[in-house]
Length: 291
Image 1 (tube, rainbow, N blue to C red):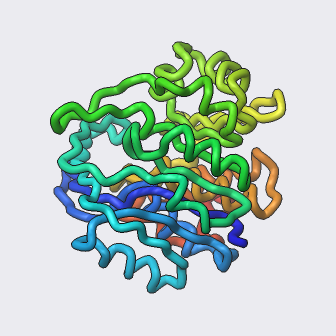
Image 2 (spheres, rainbow, N blue to C red):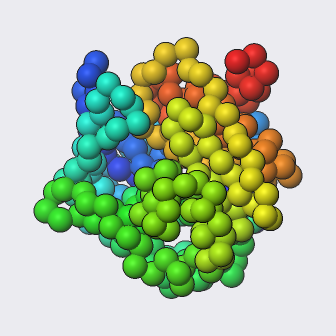
C-alpha cells in the first residue's frame, strides 16, 4: 500500500519568460514526483502517468530518484506552451498536443491512502474515475485541468460541467482565485470556499499567488502567508508544489495550518529556481521560521 499516489500526464513544456525560453518536462505529476523525492518520508509514494514512448526519458529520470512509476502508453504526450509576463501570476497558454485520458481499468491495480489527480485538461479524468478512486482512498484533485478546454491550439476557460456530481467524491480540492470564481461564481474567497464545501469538498485549498492561500476545513478558515521569495525565477509548477507539500504533511498527521504553511514555503523555494522543487525538508522549515 502506498501512502500517496499521484496520477497525471507528464507533459512537454515550452516556458517563455521575459528573461528566457526553456523546454522541459512538466505537468502536475512531474512537479509532484520530483518535489516529493526531495522530502524525507517518500518510500511509499507512487506515480501513475501516461505519455508517448518518445518522452520516456522523463520517466527514467524520476525512477532514478527511487520512485516507483507505472507508465500507461499513450499515442501522444501533452505539449504545453506557457508564456509569462513580468507578473508571474499572469500566464498565456496553448496546447500543441493531447494525450489519452486515464481509465478505471488502468487504475485497478493501484492502491494508496491518498490519490492526487493532477488534471491538465478537462477530459483527463472521467467522473467514473473520480468515483472509483474515491472508494479506494482519500481523493485530492487540482481543478485546473477541468476548467481548460482546448479549441484548436488555444486554451479557453470553461466551467466544470459535472462539478456538482464530482465534488461529492472529492476530499481535498485545490483551486486558485480564478478557478474558484469560475467554479462558484463568487469573487470573495470565503463565499467560494463555503460553496465548494457545500458541494461536498472536505478540505478546500485556495491559492492566491503573492497574497498567500486560504484553507477551509471543518467549518474553519486558515489564512496561510506567502513567504517572500529572494527572487522570482519561474512560477511554473508552484501550484503543484503547494499540493505536494500539503498532502505530504497531511499524510504525516499535520494540522491543516501546519500543512498549509509547509506547502507555501515549499512553493516559495520552487519559485526561486527553474524546474521542480529541489531543496530539502530543512530548507522548507527554514523559510517558515526565518522569513
